[in-house]
Image: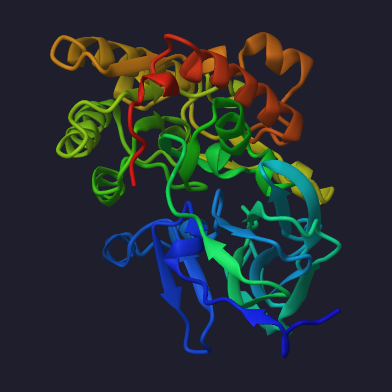
Length: 400
């Protein structure tokens, strides 16, 4: 059943969007969802970050309605690496009153095929897709439509057989989180299965996910974006991208973390803030980056990563995950003397060496859906639990 020419059409505005920092109107009248504002995107014009921040991880439409049918017209944009199996299609999921009801995959759209040997990109343009959720209960309900965490999606239009009404207020505390591809969702299959989404549901908080694949690099514009974003609870998961991009040495890392925290504290002076060090990752525990594709695995059509640095380079200031954990813990302990709402969590408490032996990272770098659920369960207990650093019950009035 297509409602593109009948029924109710609802404009896609910030009134019904949760988890995005900014909406962009396209020339064709559609809507793109950004997790960095335009001024920050201009300062960080890197192709990896440009792609990651425009992939709407954690972004969802939220409204009340009695509609039994809801239809989205969408144009996706995805990256395919030549010689490797294509990534699974993006998924859009529908929840009613917080409970999963249905999901659908995207199709068509723009495909950018990358030749990793030459760096060339071939662009192919396909049609928009229609996503229809039907046979929904006819009573009044709160609906959330979660957008794909791993591909750019332009929503062209939104249709239904009854009006969609914006939510009048936020009932739960807002949790603002920043991290790497692990926080964006990496190898999770569904948008509600990424660990921040699972943890947010368990902790009864409202997620704004600034997890950027390959791009948690202590960029000042990210810190200022977090500074300017209303939030009740804040967490930073730092370290893995610093190592696997080999972007800085120890001398630069420590002041950069201080500066990142200083920027956030300009407008979130007393907001509970949790600094989380990297989860266990064998290839980088004691070996610096940069990380690279394992060429032997690529020859077999597999994606695995290896560390290309040398352990002896640590003496020259190169970073490993072990070094970063030590420095983050020391830095947080130092700042806690004047900042009692700042906390530290060792990422190995979320996924440690024993976990790695029992359930290894499939590509040596990114978690699968099982590991995402494990991280979420432990984060919920250690961060959102009673008396924990980000205990939601301590928030008297959620941010707007």
